[in-house]
Length: 369
Image (cartoon, rainbow, N blue to C red):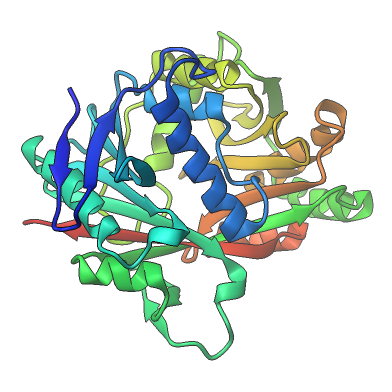
């Protein structure tokens, strides 16, 4: 089963490893080593694990599902784990694409290990007839020093430091920067006076809409229309020149996401706006929370459907969710979210609520055709 590759580096091997069946990864030292490397990377880069998956989340994610096949690789030098690689292969949509990610232990960088890992990932992707490779690199906002030379996104807006190690590595291997996302953080609690003021402004524009909320599981009577709304998330948000196809969501796909979150120790909270006259769900937003990082809440999707924009629904659903955080997750001290730099409308909502930039995410692509 393992895919093995040696390189010009003596003693280096890159092998695919099995993903455990149990969320605690019991008896699977290779996968634990893979996760430990990820933990060390987050601590080194961010100083915390706010953006790092727990072991249980990692196991459940890398098991894959009917919509995406996922593979994990370890790089070992003379028996020592020095790096990792991951490969995602969409199965329902975007079946000519592959997601690649490379990580090398800080003590072993600049030796060609990352190049060898990436070569293995791309080789496997080519064997599966994938002709477009996607990669993402998240880094702290402190690296965007005023006046620093930036590589501008090819088709979106924003840029990343031209001379950073990640930029040099991506460009050297033929990847182009397509989009930049801003990672923002909001301290909690948010002042009620601010929420009331923003809510009053939004409510004046939102006549004819009602808000509905739930925890962990979408009500059965709403799951089909909610799935339809989630399908728009992949077509109606800015994707610059990444060229991805829209995802087709149905009730089964919604339930799979919910059950995977719960199995990995992730609680969720959703608020939707429903158009009273038609019963259509016009907007939604989702927050998630992990007991492993009790101070952090994660803003997942937020979307307002075309035809319902201009009514401040994005602001209203976000305010409704923010108000419920203290009740559900009293230890939370901040909320984290991500938005494409060209998504000015949603960024404006976040700024009005008090979000501040804390990081950025370069989104890279390499096309063989």
